[in-house]
Length: 95
Image 1 (cartoon, rainbow, N blue to C red):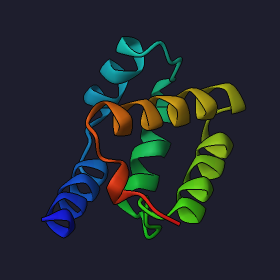
Image 2: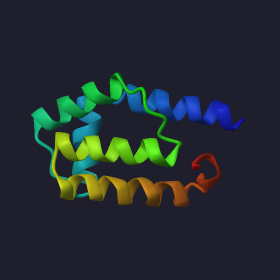
Image 3: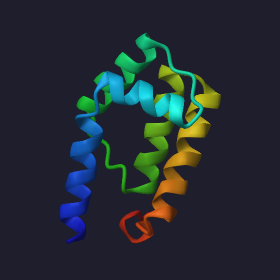
């Protein structure tokens, strides 16, 4: 079951739309420009890193910092960790 969940989550990351990403940014208090949103989506669609592995997840947030800024990357990391705990998915993330 956990492999299925992981595949679903990666699929969702790779298929997020520009409108969804902008809506999420507003909902969760991020400041994203249209260009940043397009760059993030392009990055996610070509994602080869494993977001379930701590060292590779750190690389993703580092890359996000390069696409946006440090504040946005930190907010995204905090939100990601909060959602993992909220949905009790800690067991899927390792390293």
